[in-house]
Image (cartoon, rainbow, N blue to C red; front, side):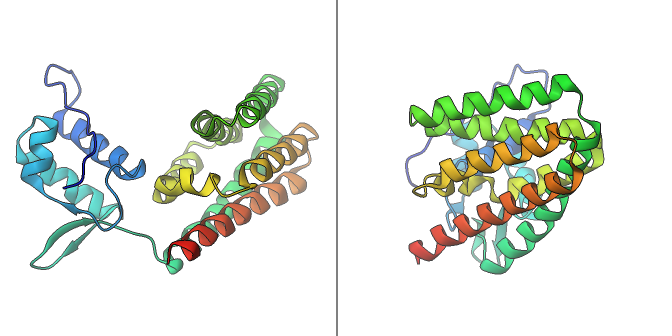
Length: 226
C-alpha cells in the first residue's frame, strides 16, 4: 500500500468512533491520500488509524452507499473513480441547484452577508496573486458556503454539499489547470455582483455558467490523464 498519512483516531474523544473513522477515510479519499482504484484493506487501514476492523468495515460500507467506494466481487473494496457519465450527471444537477441557491441569495441575502462575499473575493484574489493554491481552494469553498447560507434553504444546502463531495477530491487538480483559478475568481465576482444588484435571473445564470466551466475543466483534466 502506497505511503500516505491517515489520522490516528483519538479514542478519548467524545465523538462516536464509527463517525470519526468514516470521516477520516472520506477525507483521505477527497484529498486523494487514497486514490481512485486503490484497494482498501480493512486490517491495514485499522492499524493505521489505531482502531479495530469493525468501524473500518462499517465506514467502507457507508462510503460505498455514497459512491466513494466500489465493491468488486471476490476482490474487495476499492476507491471509486468517476466516469464521464457520472460527471455529467453530477454537474447537471449541481448546475440547477447552485443556480437556485444564487437566485435565492439574490432575493434573501442581508447586506452583511453580501459584504462577507465581497471580503471573500478579496481574500481569494490575494491568495491567487501569491499563487497559494490550497488557500485559494479554502476560500473557494467558503465562497459557495456563504451563498448557500444566504439562500435560507437548509435542505438545498444539504443536497448541494452531497453532490459537491462527489467531485471534491478532484478540485485541487482541476483548479491547477492553467488559467482556471483566474476564470473561477472572475466567475465568483459576477455571481456576487448579481446578488448585490438583487438580480435573481443574472445570479442564476452566473452560477450555472460557473458550474459548467468547472465541469469543463474537470473533463479537460480527465482527458489529459487518459
